[in-house]
Image 1 (cartoon, rainbow, N blue to C red):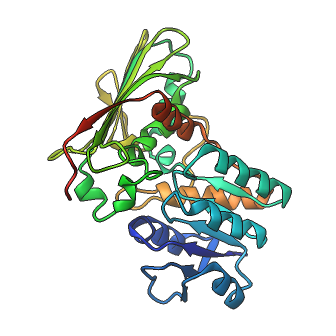
Image 2 (image 1 turned 45 degrees about the vertical axis):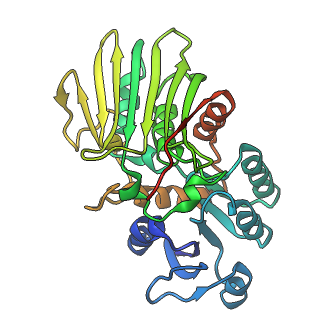
Length: 323
């Protein structure tokens, strides 16, 4: 039996990833959308959740893809109406509002899922398995992309709560918090903020590791040409490179075959040929499992790192950003 689901926000990520994943999902049927801009062909569209729920009371779950700042009110409304909630990353504009949503869901006996799509990249589980018993000496994250290419016209990214370069950078932090066998915490941050923006266009981060390993990250939204989403990981027992946002993995210079499995269970969820291949299929499969078990997944560890970066960050003013 499929779950009737509604999609809130029909922007780029919804069109590129959520709609194809839902179309292919055996667990969900997309029956309606709520969006002030954008629509899905063949699916009824509404401009408010109230109108959507009135017309489609059979909807029992909502997937929310609007920007972080207005997300809390929409998610809270869905929970108050008795619907399960899935949240695009980042799950909210603040840690405290995410905690409040989690409490609301638990009180109402509903499932809520803070998704981190990069954790579902093809080689992330293998990287975690390989690192499980290794002693880390260094880990360097390089996450550089062209904001004009990947986020055209998304002015909300540059406003307070929009995260700036941390919108993609949080993907790296979601992988970091997934693969390391021990947690790290933020030690220092430098945030490079355009004169006409509230949020950073680049960031240099340094983390404290309990065993003294050197852990750092270099995020930049100004990368032209080749795009880079990689982690260079050194241990006392060998080196690992995780590249293409977690899709590729090499150990001591040897690329791991795409179908190799170092972790305890085989990959679940469909694959596809699109960018972020299979990640959103697996997110919806995870959400289906949460609904079936009545559980909640609101891991906020990547968002906590972002919050710490903004608290500790030394701000450096740079030239204005003009799209």
